[in-house]
Length: 531
Image (tube, rainbow, N blue to C red; front, side):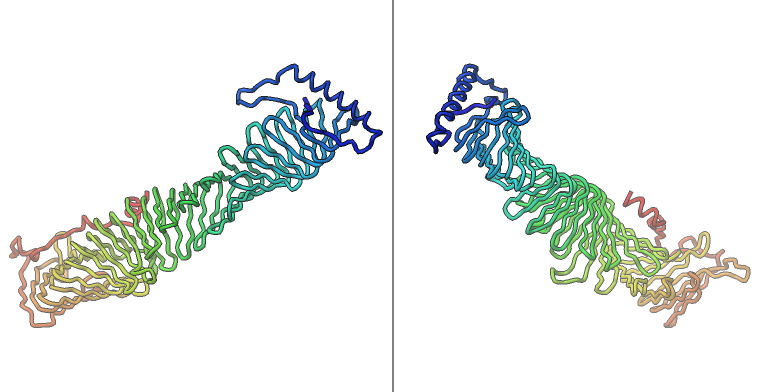
């Protein structure tokens, strides 16, 4: 129902001859007002008065019109209307009492609390309290500005929305989408369809987005891409707090920061201090170094490009025709300084290493691309095929992504199975080994050299052992077996027939065959770490 407020002058009387006509109009309006005033309007449960009628507060000119049997009240010039706490202004309007609706044109303006909406045209359903604004539609409150060509505004629920494209501006942030709902009381905006955020610090494309203009917290769902200064993030869901500069991403997250890339089930990142952590399965790859790290928990710090992986982590280093797999309780990687580009790797506690032709174990390991050397500490053991090498410290040098040579410092001990129950053995203070095409070719024993070698007769039957002591010893390999031993200084050698050997003569002092510690396969490494 439409209600006219006569407390204000409604219409000018520019011509004396029209006074009678306008007088009749005012009488009719007054009769209608008195009739409506006899029945008080209902009040709804939300606390609104529930009034259906729109009050006419002002108009320069008022007319009655009828089109196709429908009667209208036509208002022209400086029109001001009101329903409950909602004020409306426009240049002209048609009021349809039967349908409880208003059509308004020209400089349309709606005001409610802190909300102001503008457009070229307005259709207002006074029963549903729903406004449809068309043509250069704009809505503002104290928090943001919304632009679209067609805007719906629910004055009862205080919800505005568009369904055919629009954008919201908050400070220097612009959000565009095909559809959006903005809840004025909560200051929450929900966007759908080709959602894009343009911010000075980042850009975001998503299927669906929730954005709070107070907290500047973005929550996104569906395929989402975030473009930062140095990286691009792909994910299916997550949130970003632009005030705190903190974000979190869910499953199928990929972070691309060439030459590095991260895949993660869940990723948390504090950009303001360059700290991130992956929770659940993740994979980090650096294509420039052909290195990748897997794990179930990881942390990353931008400074020094620090990365730490725990919970069954695995490092994979792609070499010439093979890959080196490295597992430990904890893996770390970083550069020496922020400006340095040389990356270093650390592994500690229960370190296990596997290549096709070489395996190793130790308690802690350090590798740097500066000299391409693996440094193994505390009870290190290396196996190349069936040859076991151990000492206090082992250095494994690589060249052109191939094993090139190794150094065993202090208490070097080499064991090679010679038969079902015999082992050829070599000891020395320091031992140096050399590879050809990833196969062990030569060993040099430096200092306090000892050897125990089991000989065979023409029938390939063991006949006895040759034990020798020499300061330096050279051992040569072919087809993965010892073929020659050279004592570089006069040795003290003793040959003992098998039948005459005592039990303690089959092994040199400190002999320890540790094949039970040897990693057996790549599949075993993957199963223990990734699955």
